[in-house]
Amino acid sequence: MQRWKDWFPCQGDQGIGIFSSLRRLSINGVSNWRVAYLKTLCDKLVASIAGYKQLSTLRVQECKGVVCGIRVDLEQLKDITLAYVPEFRFQTKGFMTGLRKVEKLTIADCNDPEVTWPYLISLRNLCISTDSKLQQLHQLASLQTLYMYKCQSHLVLKEEEEEIEGSSLSSSHCRRKEEASCLETMAIVDCPSITFHPKDTLKHLEVSNCYQLESISDSLLWDNTCFEFIDIYDCENLKSLPKGLCHLTSLRFFYLRNCGSLVSFPSGGFPTRAANLFYIAMASCSKLDTLPHGMNLNSLEKLSIAYCNGLTPILEQGLSSNLAHLTIWKPYNCKPLSHWGLTLNRLTSLKDLWLGGVDLRLSSFPPEGEEMLLPKSHIILNISDFPNLRHPSSQGYRFLTSLESLEIRDCPKLEYFPEDLALSLTQLRIYDHCPVLRKRYKPGNAKDWATIAHIPYIDIGDLPLEQ
Image 1 (cartoon, rainbow, N blue to C red):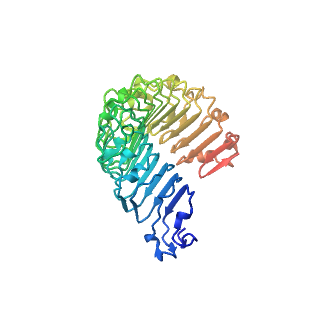
Image 2: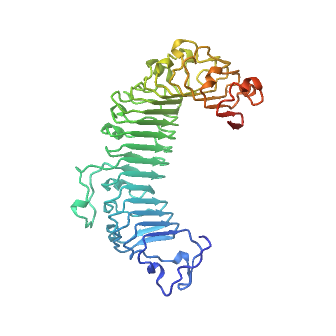
Image 3: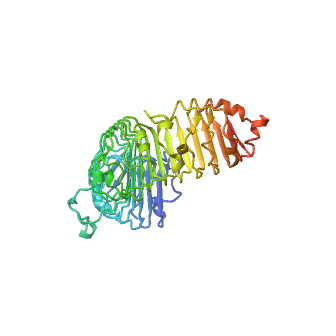
């Protein structure tokens, strides 16, 4: 496309007008166009879309400018993308009235397009990286998904309707205060200092890379029982979370990662009546002294905690017997594994266990004791970063007859693993500084290799071996 120089091989000034049934138009980064009948370069090319009532998708990217000067009834237009357009002007509001059926709009790196949001009465999905009147987004009555990238503004999605000067919209097209909101999904990415007050219908929230964000308004959660998914990560200056987490009875997924300034969790913790809370993941929140209550809910099936304080009290409370996936990775200021009070034998649904860097002095895994016996439901076991681990427990694996995958890494002193354990394995991985194991079980060592040779997939060292 970069070498394309000739415009359409047509006579006169027809241009793209010869395509009367055009449904999709894309103009993107063609810098060497040679339009013979205009004797100008591409940056002076004027392409009109006024006559294309069947157009359903419009992409305008890397063009010098876009000027919307007349009313255009694009009856079938549903998807618009405007990207990298330095000059963007609406000369009349009539143009916006012709976009009533647009359902998806993407505006990226455009110079403050003056969009009159209420005219977009069918808009369901909006992706925007500009600060163009974000305060008016609450006027989008049909909006379901909002993605914001590199915006620096105060975003309000709960305001009452504003009057539109000179508006010709009928009352049925305007959003009244009592009408139900539609917004369900919102993602705020790389917006340094944004503040926001979303609607109470929100189900899915992602906030990431907002490096100046210190707090999130309590109104986010206080009146909202619809939340199902919350993911907050890479917000290094975030110091507090909104109150009301304990009231989110519909919550299913909660992720909190790389928020190094967060010092406390809202009182009440996770909702005790949450019947659907399925997955909690918290990582790299080094200043968080205590983890929240509610991690032992019966509904919880996946729990992941990495690089955090306050783990011991949570384990002492006990975990749900319905827990199927448990990851504990390099916790801070944690008691030795044998003092955790973690009763693995009671986790009768546990299928996947990942433990890493949890006890630097441990010499035998799991620690001796009936409560530390690995349950027979176990399918995947991953142990890592045990610098003094030398041998497996003599009794800890006796019920482990269904194990399919074993992964061992960064255990430099570990000498062997139980031979009986290998009988059910379909995958074995030993790498990242396990010199004793790698030497003992490498191919060619007749005695020890024979104990694992039947395993379909083996990865020892740099190269995987598939049987």
